[in-house]
Image 1 (cartoon, helix red, strand yellow):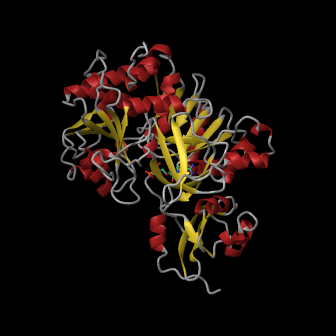
Image 2: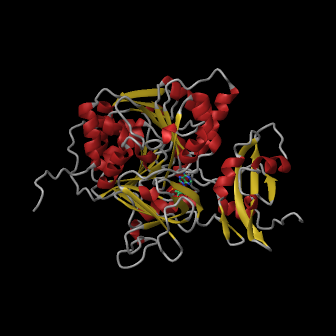
Image 3: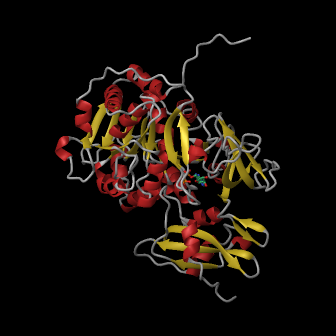
Length: 548
Ligand code: ADP
């Protein structure tokens, strides 16, 4: 027997329509690239997204075409997203932190038809131009007064483009499984690969992210996604906030501690999300001036890389802000877990609570996880045994754009049970909490046992003199590999190798203790803000361990 319920297509346009009807006056606030704060409402944004879709159609963009953006989190970027997707075209967010060759490779691979860009990226787009023949037009996301001199061919002023249109546009009703977004993984190995989100996966993912143990956004919230829209959908916030009518605060290009703090306070932000480096910056800023507070902030999502213990402790103990550790990846839309305490855990002593909260967390409905050994055999969920982390779910990639990296006739990236190997090594426990040990390629194999580089790094950055720490495995004559601790000191302070090793003592197993500590000016990062371990290993290829 068939169910007799309506077939209501899960299209991204329904999200912004919902906000328009139910939360028309709720604000979207932006720190613009031109400088001033801009305020509009969901009703305004909805209207401008319709104008944008109409303009795109007039420019010749059709269903299924790929339209690229090179832009910060702003109201304009958001209305362009909804405009592109509402036209049935595919919104391709380019990551401006990538190198020119990578960006050009990606734009060509995606066959981007036109490019919307912020003022900040005019020079970058000019450099790309000669290498990207598929891009036929450039739209600079500003008004006439701020239009720059540029060599970009047929550069259009965004505000002029919109003002030539009206709002009478019917969203294109595509199949809910058709492509809505395209985002390339940063490709730490091999070429970047395109993850193609569908309307359906975006809507289901935003619903999952809005469940109470995940971000759990509500109409009363004021949400500031610091994580960029070009980094895996700003962790779904650009969909999940309008879905519930939460106020959105878009930080634009200024992500330093002072600028972030200013917006958090001025816009009464209750929930915000970013990678750990942003939070380390904010906390350093707060510590530089003890009068500074976080008056409205209730919860902070920390993800993209492991949350250092100091970040959680300082937010929670000094500022009374709840920290949610999250894990995910571009291929997962991206959120896979969040570390909210379960029933009964709120009664535990603080130290035990931290033990749970510092894990990467539990999966929401729509995400399944398991761990396996090298032969693919499932391993126990005992919180101790670690193995390859595999995932399956409603908003997880089954292949990459144009079949890259896949196998078989449909170029799948899944195993025979439909699971995707995340490339992470992790433990799972009986409560459903997952803890990442390492990226499979970064795990340190010492005497047949595995050492978690992430865990040592996170303890090391807790030392008051350490700004950033990385741990890599380097070849060792007796143990295969041993850990080397690489440290960037905070400005104006001194700390020695022995002091750091003494600090780690008792916090990690003896045999995990780094064999040496080296101090550097800077640690290299990927375009998504993660420590670039491959470069570090290359940098230290000629390194020799101190004589025992
Ligand atoms: P990239 O394009 O740099 O690969 P992703 O966001 O897709 O960007 O990276 C996903 C990877 O980031 C995960 O597979 C995992 O290794 C790492 N990661 C994300 N969140 C966490 C976290 N909370 N703790 C540890 N590692 C994390």
